[in-house]
Image 1 (cartoon, one colour):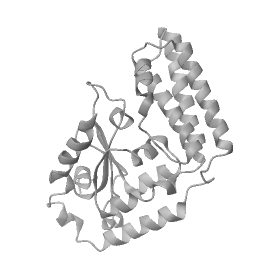
Image 2: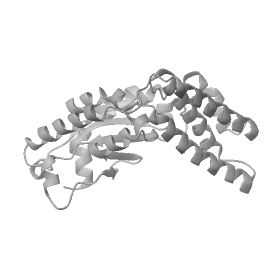
Image 3: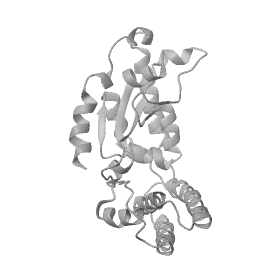
Length: 256
């Protein structure tokens, strides 16, 4: 089965990510789409396994196979967790709707380590840009501040909210280069310290609920195994071909 066919016919969850999901979109912003597909179980019985991820078929679209997505989410990968909490959901089927009920099962205090490690790597790149060019890539600086604030609030509340809300204009000022780099650095340091303090009293569990996630994955695989031969279904239209995406996209993304 062609990788794009897997996305077209077996997507269980699709959303908009990037600046539009973060509440930071401007006139020139792209629409980044992310999704999760459930590869038919019989495909795993062959020597050639289904792909763990697929780029496309649309521009700015990227999808993960369900098991790979769960693995990354259980490791508290920042990009994956944020994808699961997008405010702009374009498509879900029955399996996808059950999947969304597991959002909290993936959250744990491990997010502090992964978010902080990712943020540190990004900050080092920004500092290298300043040394080499006298200024950072301001868009990247904006998104790093957003990520640090998101991590702090997650640890404080136990909930992951990715829309920046009232912080939109201050963050866009950073993107435009209107905030001096030393002030941006100071904000980054403060947010990291606040996240560290929040960790000590966080309502999040120490580890994610791996058993709950695994139980869902096994049930999804069993249900898929009872479906018709996927080689025959490759000729049938999938959810992405039936106008669902365009309708919901017009309702949600058009709000920004």
